[in-house]
Image 1 (tube, rainbow, N blue to C red):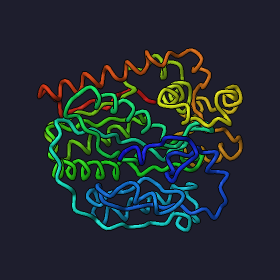
Image 2 (cartoon, rainbow, N blue to C red):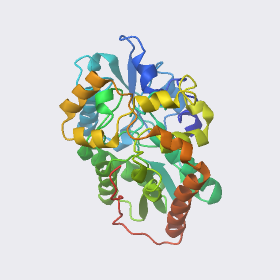
Image 3 (spheres, rainbow, N blue to C red):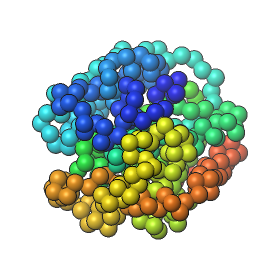
Image 4 (cartoon, rainbow, N blue to C red):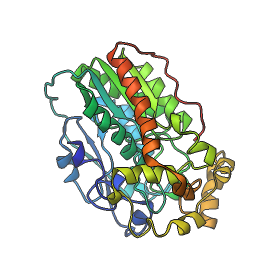
Length: 350
């Protein structure tokens, strides 16, 4: 079922996370986007039939009426253009009925990601780049461990850097924590897993801490959280390769070449580098979102923050194995009954 949702080819299909920033910018201004609200068991094929450009769903079972309204309001404040009065006209909320959740054999470990699937990743990578990376790790774990099952991802989170470029959604840390808590409670009641394993690759430390806070406030008793980039500091952070640069590009490429826009990659790597924003400039602008937006309008950077040329120096198998080895260790500890509810969200600034 996840194959019906997770991006398979860039700039194709009904799901917005499969598209790049530059492709979405090229759409007619009257293009409408669908924001579905549905059950955790609603088939993705049914959701996809709602329109040509469908945003990640919100799940009935993880929502109160108030939380649903706050999330919808925040999403339409951010998407497609941050702060635009036209957003509410371009985003159509469609509520599908809540359906009865089918009985399932309880998994030993239920795993999912909480990433920002609506976040620009430059001209060559899809918005859903973070989720693509997280589920590549989770799928490998599912092949290795019996009783390890994948749940649907939560696709909205906290971000800042994407907002000035457009086609990015920040739901704030407060709403993210509530949503994670409710989702963990809902899947615990429905599937009754022995343990929950939550991952992400998104760089915002406040995003990660909000996830941990949400799990801690839930009824989940046996769980672990992992920022999958935790072991990659020497490849990313120390090389100022923070967002949509060499590391993320090579990890998405490992999943499939079809996930990179052939109009840009790989033959326009130097062109991408010419219009990227430095990590130092992004950090400087972060406290002043209005100033960040003004800078993007004036200088027209392409959404890459860091150094795309780092790609030329990377060995993707070494990088991916570091991520997988750490996640594998987490799962083994969960299966052995070992866990630490006070999880470290990762202290590095992405």
